Image (cartoon, rainbow, N blue to C red):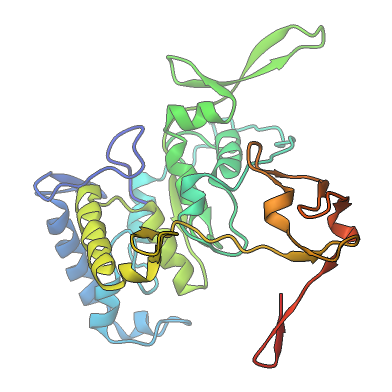
Length: 326
Protein backbone atom coordinates (compact mmCIF):
# COMPACT_ATOMS: atom_id res chain seq x y z
CA UNK A 1 0.00 0.00 0.00
CA UNK A 2 1.02 3.64 -0.32
CA UNK A 3 -0.13 6.39 2.00
CA UNK A 4 -2.47 9.09 0.80
CA UNK A 5 -1.53 12.74 0.96
CA UNK A 6 -3.51 14.40 3.80
CA UNK A 7 -6.24 16.79 2.77
CA UNK A 8 -4.59 19.74 4.49
CA UNK A 9 -1.61 20.41 6.67
CA UNK A 10 -2.30 19.56 10.29
CA UNK A 11 -5.03 17.01 9.55
CA UNK A 12 -4.26 13.33 9.36
CA UNK A 13 -7.84 12.17 8.99
CA UNK A 14 -9.65 14.92 7.12
CA UNK A 15 -13.22 14.51 5.86
CA UNK A 16 -13.54 13.64 2.19
CA UNK A 17 -16.83 15.02 0.92
CA UNK A 18 -18.23 13.26 -2.14
CA UNK A 19 -18.47 16.52 -4.12
CA UNK A 20 -14.93 17.74 -3.46
CA UNK A 21 -12.52 17.49 -6.44
CA UNK A 22 -9.45 15.37 -5.76
CA UNK A 23 -6.03 14.95 -7.35
CA UNK A 24 -4.27 11.61 -7.43
CA UNK A 25 -0.89 10.88 -9.01
CA UNK A 26 -1.22 14.03 -11.13
CA UNK A 27 -4.74 13.20 -12.33
CA UNK A 28 -7.76 15.30 -11.37
CA UNK A 29 -11.19 13.84 -10.59
CA UNK A 30 -14.55 15.40 -9.76
CA UNK A 31 -14.67 13.51 -6.46
CA UNK A 32 -13.06 10.62 -4.62
CA UNK A 33 -15.62 8.15 -5.96
CA UNK A 34 -14.54 9.02 -9.50
CA UNK A 35 -10.90 8.48 -8.53
CA UNK A 36 -11.75 5.08 -7.10
CA UNK A 37 -13.77 4.06 -10.16
CA UNK A 38 -10.93 5.03 -12.50
CA UNK A 39 -8.20 3.12 -10.70
CA UNK A 40 -10.43 0.12 -10.02
CA UNK A 41 -10.90 -0.10 -13.78
CA UNK A 42 -7.12 -0.10 -14.30
CA UNK A 43 -6.67 -2.74 -11.60
CA UNK A 44 -9.42 -4.87 -13.16
CA UNK A 45 -7.53 -4.89 -16.45
CA UNK A 46 -4.26 -5.69 -14.68
CA UNK A 47 -5.84 -8.71 -12.99
CA UNK A 48 -6.39 -10.23 -16.45
CA UNK A 49 -2.62 -10.40 -16.92
CA UNK A 50 -1.52 -13.99 -16.27
CA UNK A 51 2.06 -12.91 -15.62
CA UNK A 52 0.86 -10.46 -12.95
CA UNK A 53 -1.19 -13.15 -11.23
CA UNK A 54 1.83 -15.48 -11.30
CA UNK A 55 3.74 -13.26 -8.84
CA UNK A 56 4.76 -15.43 -5.86
CA UNK A 57 2.36 -14.97 -2.97
CA UNK A 58 -0.45 -13.63 -5.13
CA UNK A 59 -3.68 -14.00 -3.12
CA UNK A 60 -6.08 -16.81 -3.83
CA UNK A 61 -9.38 -15.18 -4.69
CA UNK A 62 -11.61 -13.98 -7.46
CA UNK A 63 -11.09 -10.68 -9.24
CA UNK A 64 -14.23 -9.30 -7.63
CA UNK A 65 -13.02 -10.20 -4.14
CA UNK A 66 -9.68 -8.49 -4.74
CA UNK A 67 -11.37 -5.40 -6.19
CA UNK A 68 -13.86 -5.23 -3.35
CA UNK A 69 -11.05 -5.13 -0.79
CA UNK A 70 -8.90 -2.65 -2.72
CA UNK A 71 -8.78 1.14 -2.80
CA UNK A 72 -6.33 1.77 -5.64
CA UNK A 73 -3.86 3.21 -6.20
CA UNK A 74 -3.28 3.55 -2.45
CA UNK A 75 -4.18 0.05 -1.28
CA UNK A 76 -4.66 -3.15 -3.21
CA UNK A 77 -5.40 -6.64 -1.86
CA UNK A 78 -2.74 -7.98 -4.22
CA UNK A 79 0.72 -6.80 -5.30
CA UNK A 80 0.26 -3.09 -5.93
CA UNK A 81 0.80 -2.35 -9.65
CA UNK A 82 0.74 1.43 -9.04
CA UNK A 83 3.98 1.61 -7.06
CA UNK A 84 6.01 2.64 -10.10
CA UNK A 85 3.56 5.48 -10.82
CA UNK A 86 3.73 6.58 -7.17
CA UNK A 87 7.54 6.69 -7.13
CA UNK A 88 7.65 8.44 -10.50
CA UNK A 89 5.19 11.11 -9.34
CA UNK A 90 6.49 11.76 -5.83
CA UNK A 91 10.11 10.69 -6.15
CA UNK A 92 13.06 12.88 -7.07
CA UNK A 93 15.70 12.05 -9.64
CA UNK A 94 19.06 11.36 -8.05
CA UNK A 95 21.41 14.28 -8.44
CA UNK A 96 25.04 13.62 -7.49
CA UNK A 97 25.65 17.35 -7.08
CA UNK A 98 23.20 17.52 -4.17
CA UNK A 99 25.06 16.86 -0.94
CA UNK A 100 23.36 14.60 1.58
CA UNK A 101 24.93 14.20 4.98
CA UNK A 102 23.44 13.09 8.28
CA UNK A 103 25.18 12.18 11.49
CA UNK A 104 23.95 8.89 12.99
CA UNK A 105 20.86 9.43 15.11
CA UNK A 106 22.21 8.81 18.61
CA UNK A 107 19.65 9.52 21.30
CA UNK A 108 17.49 7.63 23.75
CA UNK A 109 13.99 7.34 22.30
CA UNK A 110 11.21 6.52 24.70
CA UNK A 111 7.56 7.05 23.82
CA UNK A 112 4.49 5.89 25.70
CA UNK A 113 1.81 3.61 24.33
CA UNK A 114 -1.22 5.64 25.37
CA UNK A 115 -1.59 7.87 22.29
CA UNK A 116 -5.10 7.52 20.77
CA UNK A 117 -3.65 6.61 17.37
CA UNK A 118 -1.52 3.88 18.93
CA UNK A 119 -4.43 2.57 20.99
CA UNK A 120 -6.88 2.47 18.09
CA UNK A 121 -5.88 -1.09 17.20
CA UNK A 122 -3.85 -3.75 18.98
CA UNK A 123 -1.04 -5.57 17.20
CA UNK A 124 2.10 -7.35 18.36
CA UNK A 125 5.44 -5.54 17.80
CA UNK A 126 3.70 -2.20 17.21
CA UNK A 127 6.02 0.84 17.53
CA UNK A 128 4.63 4.25 18.61
CA UNK A 129 4.52 6.62 15.64
CA UNK A 130 6.12 9.42 17.68
CA UNK A 131 9.28 7.34 18.05
CA UNK A 132 9.43 6.78 14.28
CA UNK A 133 8.89 10.49 13.59
CA UNK A 134 12.22 11.34 15.21
CA UNK A 135 14.11 9.13 12.76
CA UNK A 136 12.17 10.30 9.71
CA UNK A 137 12.71 13.96 10.61
CA UNK A 138 16.41 13.32 11.15
CA UNK A 139 17.16 11.44 7.95
CA UNK A 140 14.69 12.83 5.38
CA UNK A 141 13.42 16.03 3.82
CA UNK A 142 9.79 17.02 3.11
CA UNK A 143 8.49 15.14 0.08
CA UNK A 144 10.95 12.26 0.38
CA UNK A 145 9.71 8.69 -0.05
CA UNK A 146 10.00 6.40 2.96
CA UNK A 147 9.89 2.63 2.41
CA UNK A 148 8.81 0.27 5.19
CA UNK A 149 8.88 -3.28 3.86
CA UNK A 150 7.67 -4.76 7.15
CA UNK A 151 5.16 -2.11 8.11
CA UNK A 152 2.89 -4.01 10.49
CA UNK A 153 -0.05 -1.72 11.20
CA UNK A 154 1.47 1.21 9.33
CA UNK A 155 2.89 3.40 12.08
CA UNK A 156 5.65 4.51 9.69
CA UNK A 157 2.99 5.88 7.35
CA UNK A 158 1.30 7.69 10.22
CA UNK A 159 4.66 9.13 11.28
CA UNK A 160 5.47 10.24 7.71
CA UNK A 161 2.19 12.14 7.47
CA UNK A 162 2.49 13.74 10.90
CA UNK A 163 5.91 15.16 10.01
CA UNK A 164 3.79 17.89 8.45
CA UNK A 165 1.88 18.60 11.65
CA UNK A 166 3.25 21.40 13.86
CA UNK A 167 1.47 20.27 17.00
CA UNK A 168 2.75 16.69 16.70
CA UNK A 169 6.32 17.87 16.11
CA UNK A 170 6.12 20.26 19.06
CA UNK A 171 4.90 17.34 21.21
CA UNK A 172 8.26 15.68 20.54
CA UNK A 173 10.01 18.58 22.26
CA UNK A 174 11.15 20.27 19.03
CA UNK A 175 10.57 23.87 17.99
CA UNK A 176 9.15 24.77 14.58
CA UNK A 177 10.06 28.21 13.27
CA UNK A 178 7.89 30.40 11.05
CA UNK A 179 10.14 29.37 8.16
CA UNK A 180 9.36 25.70 8.77
CA UNK A 181 12.78 24.84 10.20
CA UNK A 182 12.65 22.33 13.05
CA UNK A 183 15.14 22.93 15.84
CA UNK A 184 16.23 20.97 18.86
CA UNK A 185 16.89 22.95 22.04
CA UNK A 186 20.32 21.89 23.30
CA UNK A 187 23.43 23.31 24.97
CA UNK A 188 26.88 24.16 23.68
CA UNK A 189 30.15 23.22 25.40
CA UNK A 190 29.85 26.28 27.63
CA UNK A 191 26.39 25.24 28.79
CA UNK A 192 24.64 27.99 26.83
CA UNK A 193 21.24 27.11 25.36
CA UNK A 194 21.19 27.02 21.56
CA UNK A 195 18.70 25.95 18.88
CA UNK A 196 20.14 23.27 16.61
CA UNK A 197 18.38 22.92 13.22
CA UNK A 198 17.60 19.27 12.50
CA UNK A 199 14.95 19.17 9.77
CA UNK A 200 12.05 20.93 8.05
CA UNK A 201 8.33 20.51 8.55
CA UNK A 202 6.52 18.75 5.73
CA UNK A 203 4.83 15.50 4.78
CA UNK A 204 6.88 12.52 3.71
CA UNK A 205 5.37 9.93 1.37
CA UNK A 206 5.37 6.31 2.52
CA UNK A 207 5.32 2.95 0.79
CA UNK A 208 4.13 0.29 3.23
CA UNK A 209 4.24 -3.45 2.76
CA UNK A 210 3.86 -6.50 4.97
CA UNK A 211 3.55 -10.25 4.55
CA UNK A 212 0.40 -10.24 6.66
CA UNK A 213 -2.82 -9.34 4.81
CA UNK A 214 -4.36 -8.34 8.16
CA UNK A 215 -1.47 -5.98 8.86
CA UNK A 216 -1.68 -4.22 5.50
CA UNK A 217 -5.45 -3.89 5.88
CA UNK A 218 -5.04 -2.25 9.29
CA UNK A 219 -2.22 -0.06 7.92
CA UNK A 220 -4.45 1.06 5.06
CA UNK A 221 -7.21 2.13 7.44
CA UNK A 222 -4.72 3.92 9.70
CA UNK A 223 -3.40 5.96 6.78
CA UNK A 224 -6.44 6.50 4.57
CA UNK A 225 -8.63 9.59 4.82
CA UNK A 226 -12.28 8.94 5.38
CA UNK A 227 -15.55 10.80 5.86
CA UNK A 228 -15.50 11.26 9.64
CA UNK A 229 -19.11 12.49 9.75
CA UNK A 230 -20.38 9.44 7.89
CA UNK A 231 -18.31 7.16 10.12
CA UNK A 232 -19.74 8.79 13.24
CA UNK A 233 -23.31 8.41 11.96
CA UNK A 234 -22.82 4.72 11.17
CA UNK A 235 -21.12 4.13 14.52
CA UNK A 236 -24.01 5.74 16.38
CA UNK A 237 -26.51 3.64 14.44
CA UNK A 238 -24.66 0.44 15.32
CA UNK A 239 -24.39 1.44 18.99
CA UNK A 240 -28.11 2.24 19.12
CA UNK A 241 -28.93 -1.18 17.62
CA UNK A 242 -26.66 -2.93 20.12
CA UNK A 243 -28.18 -0.94 22.98
CA UNK A 244 -31.70 -1.97 21.97
CA UNK A 245 -30.74 -5.65 21.65
CA UNK A 246 -28.11 -6.18 24.36
CA UNK A 247 -28.36 -3.20 26.69
CA UNK A 248 -30.17 -5.26 29.32
CA UNK A 249 -26.99 -7.30 29.84
CA UNK A 250 -25.23 -4.23 31.23
CA UNK A 251 -27.89 -3.26 33.77
CA UNK A 252 -28.30 -4.27 37.39
CA UNK A 253 -30.73 -3.68 40.22
CA UNK A 254 -29.92 -0.94 42.71
CA UNK A 255 -29.83 -1.75 46.41
CA UNK A 256 -33.52 -0.85 46.71
CA UNK A 257 -34.24 -3.88 44.52
CA UNK A 258 -36.51 -1.89 42.21
CA UNK A 259 -34.70 0.64 40.01
CA UNK A 260 -31.98 -0.36 37.55
CA UNK A 261 -28.64 1.21 36.70
CA UNK A 262 -26.04 0.75 34.00
CA UNK A 263 -22.84 -1.14 34.86
CA UNK A 264 -19.83 0.92 33.81
CA UNK A 265 -17.27 -1.53 35.13
CA UNK A 266 -16.96 -4.44 37.58
CA UNK A 267 -14.16 -4.74 40.12
CA UNK A 268 -13.04 -8.23 41.11
CA UNK A 269 -10.97 -8.54 44.25
CA UNK A 270 -8.93 -11.17 46.06
CA UNK A 271 -10.20 -12.17 49.49
CA UNK A 272 -7.73 -12.98 52.28
CA UNK A 273 -7.97 -14.48 55.74
CA UNK A 274 -6.81 -12.33 58.64
CA UNK A 275 -3.89 -14.00 60.42
CA UNK A 276 -5.21 -12.81 63.79
CA UNK A 277 -9.00 -13.25 63.78
CA UNK A 278 -9.27 -15.51 60.67
CA UNK A 279 -12.12 -13.41 59.27
CA UNK A 280 -12.32 -12.35 55.61
CA UNK A 281 -10.54 -9.26 54.28
CA UNK A 282 -11.71 -8.00 50.87
CA UNK A 283 -8.44 -6.68 49.47
CA UNK A 284 -9.76 -3.84 47.31
CA UNK A 285 -11.94 -2.51 50.18
CA UNK A 286 -9.09 -2.24 52.66
CA UNK A 287 -5.93 -1.71 50.55
CA UNK A 288 -7.14 0.70 47.88
CA UNK A 289 -6.64 4.41 48.56
CA UNK A 290 -9.56 5.89 46.61
CA UNK A 291 -8.13 9.43 46.71
CA UNK A 292 -4.82 8.57 45.07
CA UNK A 293 -5.82 5.35 43.30
CA UNK A 294 -2.80 3.60 44.81
CA UNK A 295 -2.56 0.37 46.81
CA UNK A 296 -1.37 0.60 50.41
CA UNK A 297 1.56 -1.60 51.40
CA UNK A 298 -0.09 -2.34 54.76
CA UNK A 299 -3.72 -2.08 55.83
CA UNK A 300 -5.82 -2.94 58.91
CA UNK A 301 -8.23 -5.83 59.26
CA UNK A 302 -11.77 -4.36 59.32
CA UNK A 303 -12.74 -6.82 62.07
CA UNK A 304 -9.89 -6.82 64.61
CA UNK A 305 -7.79 -3.86 63.46
CA UNK A 306 -4.51 -5.78 63.15
CA UNK A 307 -2.27 -4.29 60.43
CA UNK A 308 -1.04 -6.71 57.78
CA UNK A 309 0.49 -6.79 54.31
CA UNK A 310 -0.79 -8.74 51.33
CA UNK A 311 2.17 -11.16 51.38
CA UNK A 312 1.53 -12.03 55.03
CA UNK A 313 -2.09 -13.03 54.49
CA UNK A 314 -3.58 -16.31 53.33
CA UNK A 315 -5.54 -16.21 50.09
CA UNK A 316 -9.01 -17.74 50.35
CA UNK A 317 -10.52 -19.95 47.67
CA UNK A 318 -14.06 -20.98 46.90
CA UNK A 319 -14.89 -24.36 45.43
CA UNK A 320 -17.60 -24.40 42.77
CA UNK A 321 -18.82 -27.40 40.73
CA UNK A 322 -15.62 -29.28 41.50
CA UNK A 323 -13.32 -26.54 40.17
CA UNK A 324 -11.22 -24.30 42.39
CA UNK A 325 -11.29 -20.60 41.82
CA UNK A 326 -10.38 -17.46 43.71
